[in-house]
Length: 316
Image (cartoon, rainbow, N blue to C red; front, top):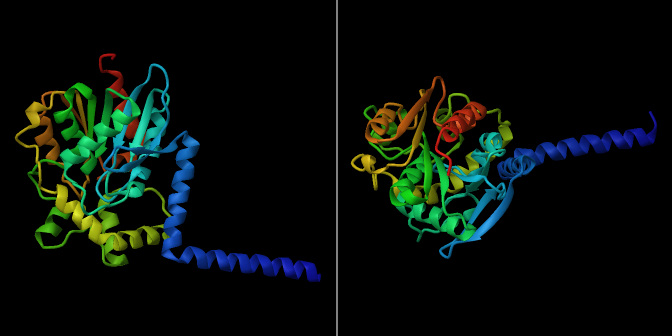
């Protein structure tokens, strides 16, 4: 074998070993996940924006304004960030301007222990974001904590809410305890991760049909949860079991779509009936065999249901 060929094979082997070593480091796995997610969002047509609302700068994806299109704002859940939405949102970009913020305490917006993490405070920040972007009214959709914030936005700003879509939302007492509720009752919050085994158990709890994710990326995400455990505990204490909406649902008068996964282990599907019975203008769709994050597990089907709901609303 020629010397040049041996050198080339050696370099390829060294590169492969180096790449494997790089990927085996959890922080690099997380960097790869974030870079890949950002690249994917860019391919769909999203730009990253940073909007100063005075209290903080909010990082967000924005598909850009287009004449005649309403705006749809998508709010992620607790401990997540804007990366959970683009695969869902891509199916709606032909009709809507889509804005996906990193809520306070999450993603590139960052964390400050002095900030208020209650649902009403987060709803006020969404209103401030719309103000800075010159948007008077919008459809708001949210998952889990994001659904809780969406409901508070509709309650506080009905004149600015074209509709509310609540996907497995927090915010009311569930008739039946979920797996996550049972863990908290036993003294442990499954979101507050101490090691990889706890993360794997938590991750399995979040979705019944998770998307494919390379192991090195999951390792990176697990490390991020461990590093941000104290911040997540602060955020959780700021919204969990505060400003609950059971007694105020009848005051939310905007058209509302409820979507739930029948296999939700974070917020039991029995809570869907509480929302539907309390909201005067609510539709409910339950996805069989799906967990806490339908927009991640079955993004196209979830987007199609949202599109049908939005398309049936009176034109603005």
